Amino acid sequence: MKKDLNQIVLAAELLAALLVIGAVSIWAPVCSGLLTLQNGSLVHMKCFYTAQAARALALILIALSVAAFYSRADRNKIQAVIAVTAFIIIALTYESSLGIGICRAPMACHTTALWMRGSGLLAFVAAVINICAGFSIVRGTSLRGKHVDIGK
Image (cartoon, rainbow, N blue to C red; front, side, top):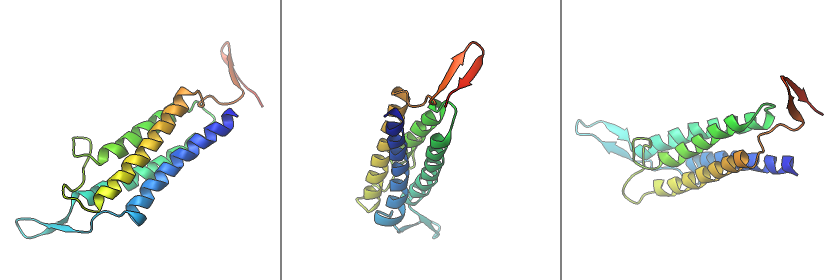
């Protein structure tokens, strides 16, 4: 039962990463507008860079989820990194020292930010559940004295 629930939690983390990539790339892409600087050159809006960073973090989240699934070691460290990565995905959507932010005017990037925040929250909650519920312990592993016995 515990192993099945662990796989469900890991699948939720993987789903969150796929939702970020899908939202940024397919069903809720960011604004395609450009800003004109005073010198006349054109640059992307900050929502474009937020989407690029979110896509990269989602790929990292996928790699971490797969690593946590196949890991035979203590998974608490991997789950902690997943929780931090999910938090950064959420923080990217806010204009702060940690995040890039999105456009202030109501544009398409607000929908993208909503998807990113929801997906980041899903991955964060799943990682915290995985850490708190003790799913990180590998089945059949016990520590006796100074030796590690790995069961079947």
